[in-house]
Image 1 (tube, rainbow, N blue to C red):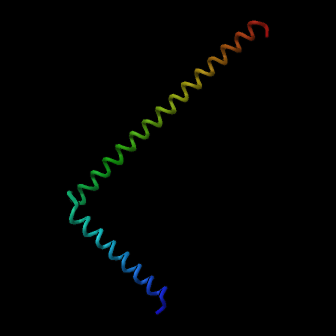
Image 2 (image 1 turned 135 degrees about the vertical axis):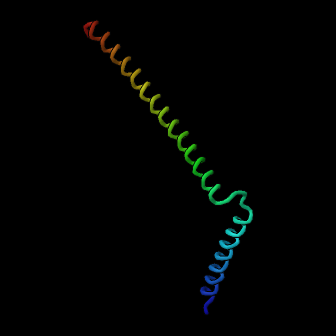
Image 3 (image 1 turned 90 degrees about the horizontal axis):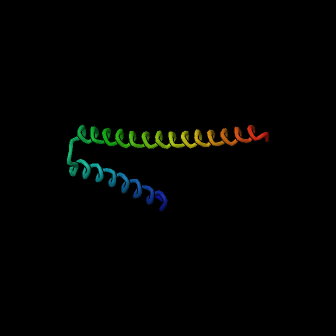
Length: 86
């Protein structure tokens, strides 16, 4: 076998060992069952998503209000110009 082939085999073996060790440690040290953990993750993700959506909507409402204010100011200025015979 060539050196590259040996290095590849060592890498693959090390990767598989690392994956197996991670799975075993994860199962051994997990404080909750899989069902409980999935339920908690779903709650956290949906809670975080709702906060992001709320922040996004509030930001868009602020932009809309700013645009309305700018439009009213521009309309008032144009009205003054027209009344002054501009």
